[in-house]
Length: 188
Image (tube, rainbow, N blue to C red; front, side, top):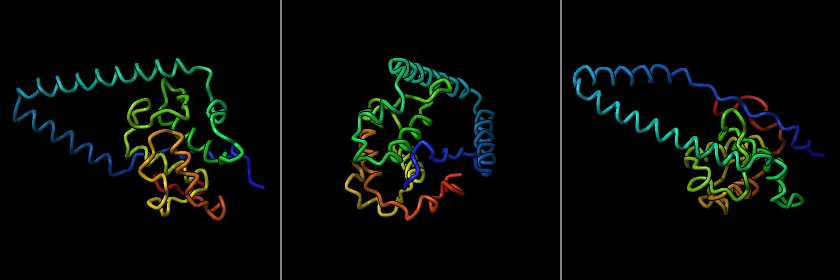
């Protein structure tokens, strides 16, 4: 008998790679050198930083309002929008928890709905980040990402429901113990 999904291992914490710090130092040194050589560019760079900061504040405010409108929703609300007798509960939990953790608002998990648009409208997840989240959810759910290109949902994931269907069509690992989530994680 398969272990209930509520006993699924927690998602591994992502760690910053050691090589990221020297690269960040080089980028900052390059910006510093550019400003030293072109002192008037400080105004352009400052205006760009202020615009990006304002756009980030606006996006956080919109996500906060959306999360507030969904207060009281949880994984149970999410699962109720699927047929639990035909849908793998491990996939449901893995997708919900990975997306909720990624979209955290003010330190609280974001309540995800099955019909949320992943990239365009509602959640605004970058397609590369969505691919990484799908890989993490697959690992936690005991699914292999081998042969993903042959999956009928490959390239057609627009809603959270589509992501669940995509992962359900991926082959199961022989044992969940074979999953990298029970040892080292390829992203960490």
